[in-house]
Amino acid sequence: MNLTDSIKRTTLHEELVERLRNLVVEDVLKPGEKVPEKQLCDSLGVSRTPLREALKVLASEGFVVLQANRGARVASVTREELENTFPVLAALEQLVGELACQQMDSVEIQRIESSHKDMLNAYKARDRQAYFKANQDIHQALIQGARNDILENHHKLLAARVRRARFMANLSDERWAQAIDEHEAMMELLKARNADGLGKTMKLHMMNKLSALLKALEAEDETPR
Amino acid sequence: MNLTDSIKRTTLHEELVERLRNLVVEDVLKPGEKVPEKQLCDSLGVSRTPLREALKVLASEGFVVLQANRGARVASVTREELENTFPVLAALEQLVGELACQQMDSVEIQRIESSHKDMLNAYKARDRQAYFKANQDIHQALIQGARNDILENHHKLLAARVRRARFMANLSDERWAQAIDEHEAMMELLKARNADGLGKTMKLHMMNKLSALLKALEAEDETPR
DNA sequence: AAAGTTAATTATGAATTCATTATTCAGTCA
DNA sequence: TGACTGAATAATGAATTCATAATTAACTTT
Image 1 (cartoon, chains in turn cyan, red, purple, green):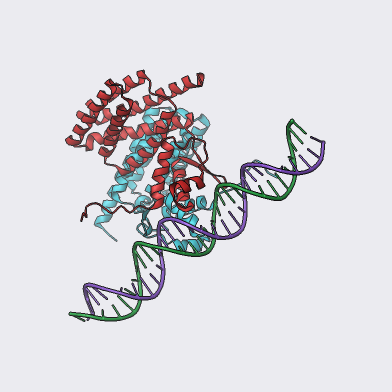
Image 2 (cartoon, rainbow over the protein chains, first blue to last red):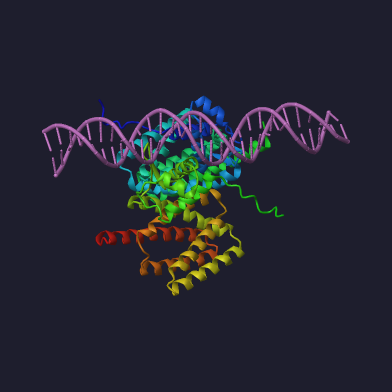
């Protein structure tokens, strides 16, 4: 018998918060759609009580919008929201960079370097899937390295909201090359433990991502469908 | 008939989130205490359903901690939490300062200057109550001035969590004087529309607040009661 | 047929009920 | 006395029920 594994004892509503959030982030539930309580209850095999509890939480996280007596709708990702969210995320990233430089040990940094190399290889092979994976790993490791739960939570929520921007996946060649350059700089700064430099670079990295996103958005506006 | 006033149509659970959060922030519900569902329901005149919905939201905001089958407890304000929260708040404040400089109009700045003078008067009169009020007004106005909902939301939540610490330590004369100096600098930078300067000063202001708090807490540890 | 009105249906918010898990407390034994 | 056991009690999580508001459908009326 294994006593080290703590008994997984999660409540329905916690489980549902995760599941529903994923449905929103993965774009299964589409922006603007209303969340069909009954259907979801049936397909998930739960009663309305825990589902509704979960919706309240999702609403406070900004993934859905509640309208009194009219239920929940999936929050739409507006341009304005992106323009508001990215600067906040950038500020958090800056802090992540500063703290990570101060807090990470050399083993962790080596692991990041490994992911960084994976990322470069994926870039050379133009393998978007692998690139996103490695990229995620790096950012995740940096956040962990910052050793700050509060920072991690808030970052996680904002990042999830922004990840819904569907054009995110359509990375232009130009932006991709720029992102790689930025990552090279970040890696160097991290290894040099240049906290201020890494913070500033990560902030910039995020703001450049916004610029690219907005540019892609504008292009789409002009060529709808 | 007045059509400009939007119909106040709030749901019970929304109301309860506000009320309960206040009870926690105002230290009516004390850290570590368990939240007595039944009693609260009776005294607030609602059933358990909306109250529990509210608790789930409060939990996701970090004001209470849920334990499966054991209900909710008021989250305690640990030293570690303060050390984690303040840097995040400071990062957000920096952004607030930068954006406020860019976005506020001169009328708004004048209003802040008025609150600033109120604050100075309260300081001279050693009126803590009035000081806190004016201080709140200033910070609130700056946040509004940043014109960023996302920033406002996240700032509000973190600030509320940290505000609970004021019951742990009092404002020392030394820190009070320092805070006034910092506010003077902030006012000048705002009027000069020095975004970078205001951002940095507000960040520092927040980190100095943390230092003062930690110092006061240490002193208290040595002199318990 | 189109717009407007009313009735039927559905969905939602909140209260209540029910099953299960913690907690308390009396009783037992070392 | 003090630790253990187990029944009684209380609380919690989730399902169900109920009242009401929103939506849809049916029916006028022009």
